[in-house]
Image (cartoon, rainbow, N blue to C red; front, top):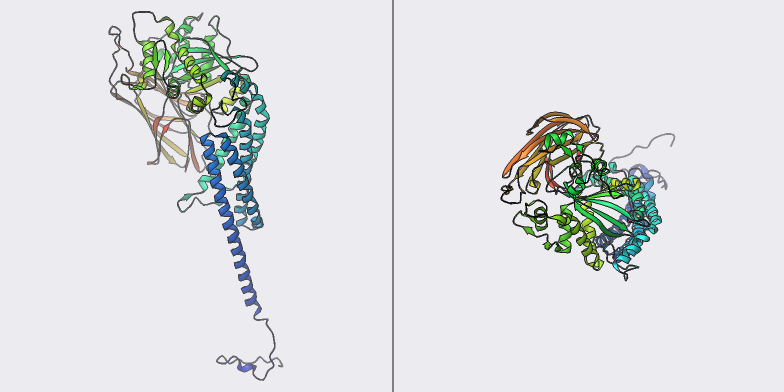
Length: 639
């Protein structure tokens, strides 16, 4: 070869090889063969991966369907169905986990590995959550019939009183279970928190993805925090229910038709004794009787002197001036201490007319003092008949002394209790338990316990009517009816919240509209009419983040006041809403610097005693949400 390079005939590349021996040299073919083998190998791997993924996806769908059926069992409140479905869901999820682990080797692959790890976190969170559910079901099974759940109970054959007593006495057995549930929930929180939502797109087609993951993480974290914070109260449940020592609670009836800061004018009270879970009413009367028993007079605070009509002293019935229930009850206690022969109590519970109506809807007519109280609509007020009759008992002028009829609220509560407890638990208790839970969540029932741990528990659950701290924007609108009859029964309130987001600067325009479409009542003392609908004299307070600057306030009939209270800035005014009339308040203000980041956050707190004012939320000129505020609501919007 002598270093010569053979010439190649491009028209006939074989020609230079003539006369030469054939050599089996594949060196120039190796790259092509290797590439082909590699492509074939990748194809086989991806095909196998596809089959595995398809199988896992099919298992995941099956597991999801079983989980939905489990959730349905929870909604049906069938504890036996819950237990069976939890076991089945657990089995399906374990099978899914085994199949999923086959793909565990992908966890080391850049980019793809993160998705596998997120899926693994989700499965482990699901298993821990199921275990927590199984412990909970096992714990409450003995009390199934008392909670109105479908299922067997270990003391179902006993009388109602014996069932309640047995349940309360054995509640301490739940404490170890509560700790176990907390441990499992801590695992759920840890696994969910490990999921990285930032690796997922906002949307895939029409399916919202990343925001759902964020919501899941927030909700799981919130629920677990509530459970952990409320553990103290749960563990104290036997003591709060009178085991082993009896407890006494003062129950205040707030008339939300004459709205006050914490839910309504305090019109009546009842002293409840609870011993081994059994309730008895020891005393019930009109709040005026309690006020008359005070040994000293208290001068009216500036707010009453300024906004109320002809009132110069502070009474128990007017003591709930603060929108924070705890603060109001501290003031109530201060006055209550001057009542001789007052009962020693362990806490205060407040409820409004909404609770009575909802209970009567379930139980049917409740007799008291020769009247059948019902939840049917009474045309005389376009309200439930029980409301009209209570107002007639309390306020309609009569030619005789009502005497003992002033305890009508206590009698009604006692009759409701007797009817609920005097039948098989399966008849009413399920619906009553659901109703009570809803009423508490919507702030128609408020709690103040003297026991610090119990109080921390109800506050953690947002059952204590507190004005909450919040890291973000905040709004609470509080109306107080001072000498405006029962006009809140007729007035409709709506709120339009316009938010201008300009980088870090937030300007808000708030429009509150009050409408009373009904004619006035006959309020003449001589005619003996029942004065319900009269001009609403409304003391208005708007609670916003501390440091907010008021830019404009239109619609107040008195000089607007700006002050700080309960860790908030407060804008205060006064207005009158006439029957068949309308009033409007427009407030413009600037928020203080708040660290929103990429998300605007606002907490709107509902005033107790209200039934769901309509809110319209507008951001930068665009309506983003309309809702009825039936409970506290948190809003999050991308900046």
